[in-house]
Amino acid sequence: MTSAGALPVLRFHLAVGARLAMRVLVPAVTAAFGAGMLLGVDFLGSLARSLFGAGSQGGSAVVIAAVCLGAAEIAGPRICRGLNGWLRHLPASGLAHRRAATLAVAVAQVPLLILLLVLAAFSSLAPAVLARRILQLAITALAAALCVTPARRRWLAAPLALIAAVAAGAGGWGMLALGAALLAVADLAAGDLVATGPPSAHLSRRSPGGWIEFRIAWRALGWSLPGAFVTALLPVLGAWAFVAHNEIAPQYVRLAARLGGGVAAVLLLASLSESLAVRRPAWPWSRSLPWTAARRVGADALFLGLHALPLILLAAAIHPAALEALPILPLLALRAAGALRRAPERRTGAAGEILGEGLLLAALVALLPWTSLPALPGVPFALRAAADRERRQKVSRWLELHHLAAGDPQSWSAS
Image (cartoon, rainbow, N blue to C red; front, side):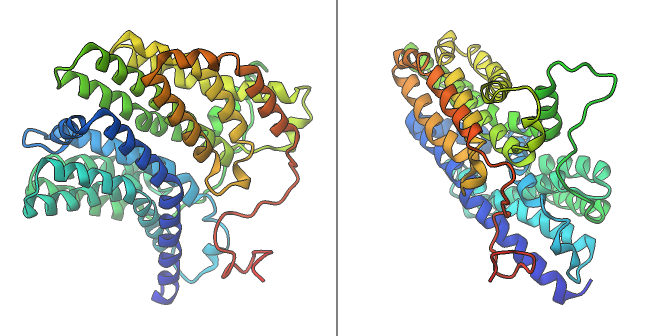
């Protein structure tokens, strides 16, 4: 590896991670902070003490590591999607490419880290404590990024990095040093960057033809599905912590349950629709099957809705009022199925559209439960709109990756 080749690779990946943080994670973190403010400053204080208070140890470290891992799962596929292209021709080793990609995934988590640091400031303003929290969050973010980066010995590095992410935040300076040491060992064990690319969608010859859409979608999502669920569970866990650690009136318990379940479903729909838009975009082969546009859209909506349904049912364990958010789920699932068909044309992708519409609708239903009922008559119109988007797609169009064309020798629009 030469420094002349490694530094441009590092600068490129840092820019990719920064742009991804601004376009994807900043809206999500802003929405989460807005939801926290809607629940009140007392909720933020209780959450801060639970995560960063004097009594928080291993349990809070696991939660923070899970949050960072979920953010890394969102950023990882976008950053690592085109690593086998022209970048590999630069005079830099595979190890330099892998470390640069890991750092980019960590940089993409910066908005989330800022939110966690704000919560840490709620629990303590002592400079020494805040400095330790900053280092703990940095090591946790790097470890989570290493878990999702495609490395040659990922099977060995990912468990070590996951242990490092938990250990770094599980105690004082000693545990921080242990986490940093484990992260260094995991980085040495990871090795070079391996070949990356979208998985091939095919079926076994022995498998029946039913549920083919679901199997293709599951294969396309791969291991990003657990990470999406981890991220989507956070509103439900936040609502549970708010109810469990405060003595509040019954109407606020119902509000927290509805808001937690609705926001969790929206986050999962946004994450899955974005991943499907990237890893399983529209392709001409599906047009050759005897399926209408409405069936293709309906299959995607059913896939997304069934995955989001358990989150609302889980929120019902806080209070059965969370079930009042169920009527908006079919509408949001169809909107997500339509959004993923316009994702390549938008800088914010499918997630931006669903977060904008879904979070507003979830907050409205949390405050006024009866507003969920008008969502049911809107389902046929949402199906028609999504099917129209499906029909208007030009599957043979060329879509460049969303990076700066200047400096890309293979970009058709660089000149």
